[in-house]
Image (tube, rainbow, N blue to C red; front, side, top):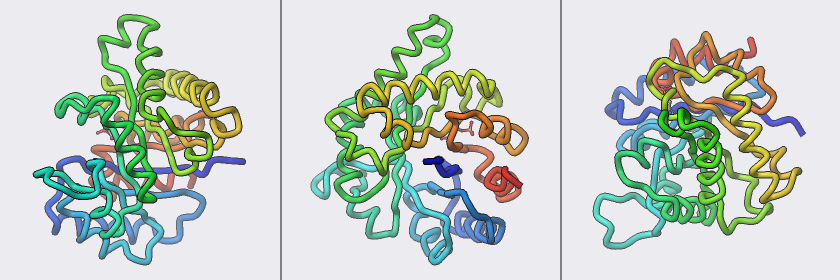
Amino acid sequence: MPRTPFLAGNWKMYTTPEEARDLARALRDGVAGVEGVDVLVCPPFTSLAAVAEELAGTPIALGAQNMYYEDQGAFTGEVSPLMLVALGVSYVLVGHSERRQYFGERAETLNRKVKAALAHDLKPILCVGEKLEEREAGASWKEVVRGQVRAGLEGLGAEDLGPVAIAYEPIWAIGTGKTATPQAAQDAHAMIREALAETFGAATAEKTRILYGGSVKPDNVRELMAEPDIDGALVGGASLKAETFVPIIRFQE
Ligand code: 13P
């Protein structure tokens, strides 16, 4: 079964609700009529409601950049899966490297978030990727990435994996303008698919989408997407302007 290309924008800590609304409108117009791809935007929490309004009735899906794993409670400052679902959110990023690096998110927490997302019909995108030091330390970076995949999905069975996607984002390529070469990204994706196959079986691994993230731009998306195990892109900087995100979404044209 071919995997539908999946182009996702992570807006990170950018956009006021008004700016987000303008961007959502421009994207909606820019992708009108595009077929055969799945498109997702992940605005900050405070812009989700505005973007949900602008995207209602369009094929662009709405995602959150993070969430807590409890339904409700005394967890000041956190946002629950129930709250996201109520806003029309259908995807959630889990374990983005910036969450791991700056907010101390650990494997066990991320695993709970993946499970909470699935329990609430939110589709988790589990983000993994190695640091520059790990890459430079040689082959052990592969164990780091495999370990992140295994820990994030621990306790799940093949039957749970349908809604799950993985995003491979080598930390040294995020926001640096240094993209992994298509071949290096392909090698990492193939390794991740192999790790999925070991745990969940080959058929499930073949169906799971693995997105690449790290300085994806209109001028490198085509060659990345041409690789057999790269099924999509998780785009940061270039997703903040319709003039760069729309051509990424329309990479097949
Ligand atoms: P950039 O596209 O800005 O490198 O960010 C990638 C990323 O972290 C997406 O989640």
